[in-house]
Length: 100
Image (cartoon, rainbow, N blue to C red; front, side, top):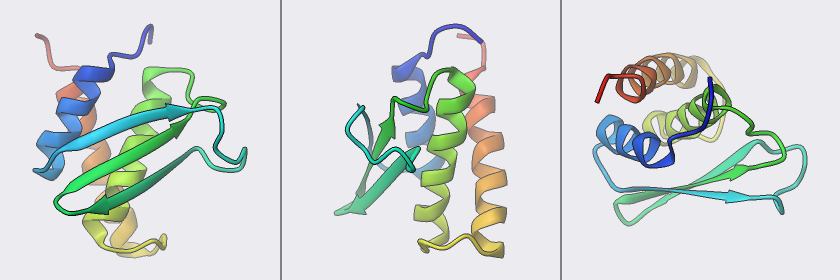
């Protein structure tokens, strides 16, 4: 998959959720977390654990996962979350891999 195009990923995420998204990377998150999200005041902040995110596909899956929590409005992984994750992942990939 090659290098991760971070700005393209951020723009795709913003298009999918319709609000500003910031993507932060860290090696200080607990090792059991791939990512974390905070959505407040009309924006979304996603922290990715660089111990786990090694490819564009890893980043797309993690960002889609965190955005699904925001869209589904739940920290849990029930049916609403699963449906949101699938749709967001599909749309993120479509935007991310769209030819420039």
